[in-house]
Every structure is written in structure tokens, then in C-alpha cells.
Amino acid sequence: MSFEEFVKERFPYDKPKFREGPNQIQQEMMPRIVSAIQNGRSIVIQAPFGLGKTLGYLLPVAYFAEQNRRVCILCPTKTHQDQVFTNNYNEIKGAAIQPLLYYGVTNYECPEKGGTASPAYCEAHREICENRERGTCQYARDKNMVPNARIVITNFAKFLSASPEELGAFDIIVIDESHGFEDAVRSYMQAKISRTMVENSIEELTSFTETDLSQPITFLNQLRRCIDDALIYVGEGDEIPPDVLDEIQTLIMDNQRTLNETELYVEEHTQNPAESSFFNLHKHLVKLLSRLQNRYDNIFLIYEAALLGTPRTERIQQQHVAQRVGNAQVVFVSATIERPDQHATDCGVTGKTVASFTWGEYPPERRRRRCLIALRGGPILKKPETGVPLEERLGANMIIERALVNFQKRSLVLFRSHSDCRAAEAYLRRNPRIATRLHTLLEEDRDAAQEKVNRLRENDIVLASASSSLWEGVDVPELKMLIIDALPYVRPPPEIRSRIASLEYNLRKMTRRLQQGIGRLVRSDEDWGIALVVDGRLYRNRRRILPRLPTYIREDLQNGFILTRKLGEVMTNFIQQFEKKYTLEDFL
Image 1: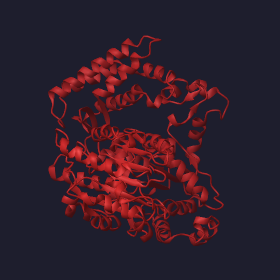
Image 2: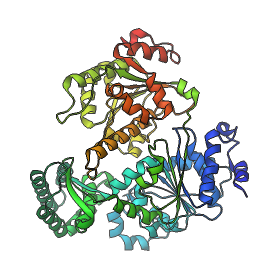
Image 3: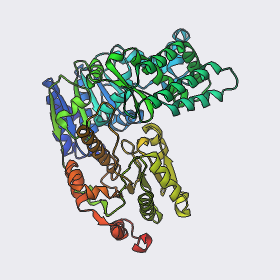
């Protein structure tokens, strides 16, 4: 059967939203994916948000799966895995192959302990679990099925942590939201131990009064002193002296058994071990010890007030990815890829011939239903070492308050840091018309954040910091107003040392996150919404920033630069097209 015949037979024409068949972008991208795979090439697919990219890659991979090719679909999170399967793959008419959704162990229920499964518990009770009735443990059942499953849908973290033998070899690998994969690889390869992580773990262990945990607490206090020594000895971004590293390595090795036993105890006596402070610390300690025992390939720095062990070069990260990718053709899919020709290498995939397809159009109707505003003369939210100047922070808070106070629809305010988010929250909570609507999300991962936003009331406001993951990948249903406080510049990783490379990294990451933030708005043809960028630096640096944005964002922002005093008028005129009850007086 040709692919054209496959589409005619399997595309979900019977569903109302697909009655007219593949849309224009799907008609373009699907044959390109098929051609690339047939010719032994990988391919980078870039297209705007919400235009059907997922179904556009699922039909080609389902076609090849029915020809006995093994396919792995990688997603950023468990929630995304479920969405790909439930909302997209299940739409394929008469799908002949049932995908296997494979999660990390902490996403399964353990029948032996009667709660969340965990690596330490599974390892400690392996013999008991293996002697249980076959099929009782869902995780064990999935793990046994993975090497032979024709289509596996898993997440970045599981793919990077599983051995090649555990997953088996694949012919085709799709990396959905691939712009985040390079950061996922870097994060997986790093061990980061902060003083706060250690202190939180000490506090957690102290709360277990039923048993004596003085030995691991003593170890943690010693580890904290070692980190304090490193903070004193070296400056930010500098390498830690070998004698301090020797002390830390010896300390961890001497306490390995105690740490393992403590982790098992914490997991057995904690309702959700994955959220345990000690669980998280122990995971990084294991990685740190591995890095310390292989110092030639790793560097150890003080970075963001934490001890960081990270691969010395990108080559090491690429080797790790290459082991897991093997000989598979890779399909990279994202809405925000700055350099398609470089994207595969940025993700750690090298040595492959890579084609690319970029779709730059955005539906005119969606652009009409979306208003992008950026302030001319807005507060300059540049963050020096001492923090944002108080008058600039206050000015931003007042603008955000004015935009939110009378607009009784679901709103999302995105901040670049905890401190900015907390400062704005404290200010906004003083207004009784806003206080009861506020919800603050700081460090939730995408799965937890998605669960929380799904429970929002119609007029709730969410304040989110950069680490909350609401900047990208989390859909806020019925979102009508999006406010971006400060431009989301990020700090470059420690391996980037030169000033020019750091500036380029900062700008590239910032424009990607800015696009992702704006992409939270207007996710369907029937939706509408208004986005406001408060930071005056966007207008001041427009000649440097705007050319890096896609046309459908760049042009709308160029037309959306306004003076602060015009904000109420512009917002009112736009909102009145959809909500007649709003007047200019509401925003004054």
C-alpha cells in the first residue's frame, strides 16, 4: 500500500474537525517525512503552534510501523505522552498497532507497597516482585514488553535514563517539542547539589521521629560544610579545587550504604517519594559520584550558588544520545527552532543526513483574533546583580494590576524569576478585586502544572515563574489574557565561557521562550486573546530581537508597540470585539 492510499484509508475523515481531510501543512509535511525515512535521512519539522503537527507525523510513523519498522515517540512529559496517544493517535482510523506508553517508574503504582513505585524499592524487593503472580506489576509488565513493542511512546527523561537494551533498537525516533530536548540532555548529564537542597533534606529527615536517622543527617551536615568550603574557595563559575573534590568524593563513597538505606526508608514512609527532598538529592549525589570517579570527562564548578558536575564538552553528551538513538532516522518536531540546519547537533544527534521543512504561515483568522502589545517607554526590567530597581518593579506591578483588575477572564502572568513573581504577587494581593483570583506556580513540572490549571475557575489568574514550565508545553484552557513581565533571558550554561557565545546563547534562548510564551494564547480557530509584554527592553532592542522572531509574531509585535498611557484604550477596543460589556473606564 502506498502512503497516499494509507492516508485515504486511515485519515479520520469521519471526525467533524477532520472532515475536509489533511490541512495544508499536513499535506506538505507528511510526504516529506515519508520521503526522508525512505531515503535513510532524518528531518527537522518546524511549524507554528496548534496547526496539527502531531497528527502530521503520526500518520507517517503509523504507516512505517505497519511495515514492521519499530518507532519511538519522545515527549517532554507524561501529560504530553497521554495527549499524543489519547487526543491524536486514537484519531487514526483503524489503527492496526496499539502503542505502548512507557513511563518513569515513579508514574506507576506498586502493588507490593500499595503506593507510588520507586527505583530503590523496586531494586530492594526485586525477588519478591519476581515471585508475585505474573502481570500484577504494571511497570514490570511494560518493561518486559518494551523491547518488542512496535510503537513506544515515552518521555525525554525515560529515554535518556534507560539503557539501549531496555528499550531495544528503533528504526524511527520522533522527538516532539524537540527544542526542549537539548536542555533535557544537558540536565540529565548534570549533577547539581545546592546548599538549599541539603538543608531541605536535613529538615525532611528530622521530621521522621519513628526511627534514628542521625547517621544520614550527620553526613548531610558534613556535605553542607564541604559545599560552604567550595563557595568560599572559588568564585561564581570557577572550578572547584581537587582537594575539596577529593573530600566530597570520599564522603559520599563512605556513606553510600547509609544513603541507599535512607532513601529506601524515606520512600517506604512517604506518600509520594518522587516529591521527597531526599529522593531528589540522592539522585543527584549518585550522578555526582559517577562524575567524580571520571574527572577527565567532567568539570566541577560553583554555578548559581550550587556545586555542579557537568560534562566537559558537548561531545560527551552527544555520545550518550548516540548510544540511545543508534541507527534510527530521527524526526525533530517543534514550533521554535532557531537554526534548523544546526538543530540535530544541538540535540546531540550527529553523523546523520538531515533534511528540513519550515512552515512559516499562520492562519490569518487566528492573527485577527489575537492582539499582541508591547510597551514603548515601559519599565526597563534589566536585572543587575542587586536585582531590578524598585521603581521599575513597582511600575511593572502597577501596569499588571491595571490590566488584570477589571478583566474578569482567565489570565496568565509569566515572570522570568521567583523573586519577580513573589514581588508582583505581594503587590497584587493587596487589591481585594484580584487577591481571591490569584494562583502562584513556581517550580511545578509540566504534569503537575497541567493538573492545576485544568481546575481553574473561569476568571482565575495564574502567576508563574520561569521554572514552573507554564512558559511552554502547558495548555491553559480558555486563556484570554497573557502578560509577559520581563524578557525571559536565561543564564548560559557553565561550559559557555566567551562573552560573544554567552550573548548569542542568551538571545537565542530568550527569543525561543518568548515565542513559547506567546504560543500559550489562541490555540484554536474559535479562541481569542490579548498578550502584553511589559518590559520596555523589547521596544528599545527591537532591531536586534524582532528579526529573530517568525513573521507571524514579528509583524504583529511591530504593529503592537504602544505608549503606556494608550494601554487601556487599545485593550478595550480589541476586547470589545468579543466581550461587549467592557469599556475604556474599566481600565482607567
